[in-house]
Length: 414
Image 1 (cartoon, rainbow, N blue to C red):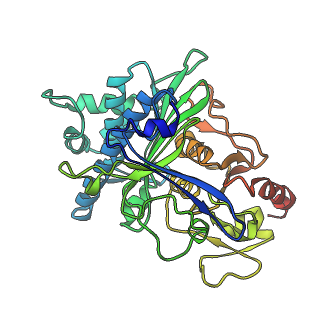
Image 2: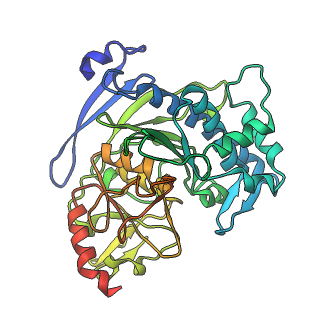
């Protein structure tokens, strides 16, 4: 059943189709908006059950983030620092526990790879807070949720939970909160709950929830200039992708309250159509400077969108964490996300997996600096680390090869 025929079967029987032309070069763009639990027919999406479950649990996880953030604003508890000096909160553990509990109930044979483990939580006397945070979000009926349930759920995604081998056909990859520093900063900095499913080494679906996504009026992105605005402007969105079915977004349920109405209108996303590197909008990690990247030998960087020189590119600084930047590229609000590998910092699978499929299905490209795809199975035992050569390059696809050429030509200069 094709998409137009499928639209007539949607429960609300609403379907919208429009074409946009972008400038300066006319470019036909197709944007679909549908109302349904997922925005494409089940027979087109092989993993529709897994996707529907992932959407549901990520929406509930976003509610945890909002609730915990409110409590953190009124107290000083619940914020910890891990051995690598990155912050972690009750929300990180609560989201991981919730996602683990729900997915294990529905898909018990599919293991989970996730960022946190309970040893750190146990040593800081915050288990009770995590249980309270998760209890009203988990669907366990009348059975009370215990500390043991939560700790076991967190450890199901820990580094010692699964020893992978050739027989492990599928697994989930979770970043409970990517951009915890942004989560703690306030409403301006973006953070993401990210969940992906990997089957036979390939990412087949992904869901990202960004509870504080807002229309950014401080700059005009390439997407907006071209009349291609993919993501709804209201606060809070969820982005999904399924292999072969595109990347889509919708608003999170309004206010994410239990009595709130669900906004179930999906809009398809495409990367922007920028053709020139000097006109592209870039995202880089907060921990890295523009001068540490090879392209700095060719262009200076500015954050002032209204005063860009001939040899300058624009840096966007409104998000923390890698997944937020993938979301910016997949939605057309940025053209490029680039990061450099560093000897002292490992590249984690959960910082990239869900973003990779969202960018790919939106028409973009993700490789290392040599142009090779990122190998999620390179860590043969735990599937937790990836080893990109040089760094990671995420783009709209149009300027990808040109940037790779620039990297190759200038890497020795930096």
